[in-house]
Image (tube, rainbow, N blue to C red):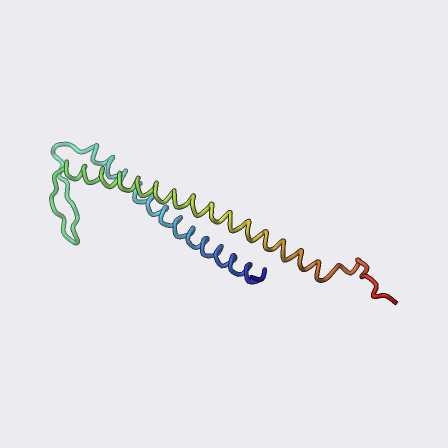
Length: 133
C-alpha cells in the first residue's frame, strides 16, 4: 500500500473516531443533565411532608402515585444513570486512546512522506551527483 493511500485511510479512520468521540461526549452531557434533574427531584422528595401528594405524569395526564414508589423510582433512575455514566466514561477513554494511536500513525506516515519527498526531490542547495563528463 502506498504511503498516500495509507495516509488517506488512516486520516479517514481518525475522522471517524473524532465523530464517534463527539457523539459519546454528547451522550455524556445528556446523562449529566439527567443526573442533575433526578438529583433535584430526589432532594425535593426529601422535603416532602406526610400531607404532600405526589403525581406522576403519564402522557398528558397526572396520576396520583405513592410517595415511596416515587422515591424508589428516582433512586432506581439515579443508579441507572450512574451506571450509564461509568459505561460512557469507559467508552470515552477507549476512543481517546484509539485517537492517540491514530494520531501517532498519521504523524509517522506524514514524516515518511516528507522523507520520501526530500529523497526524491533534493533541496536546491544540495549538489547533484555528476553524470560523468
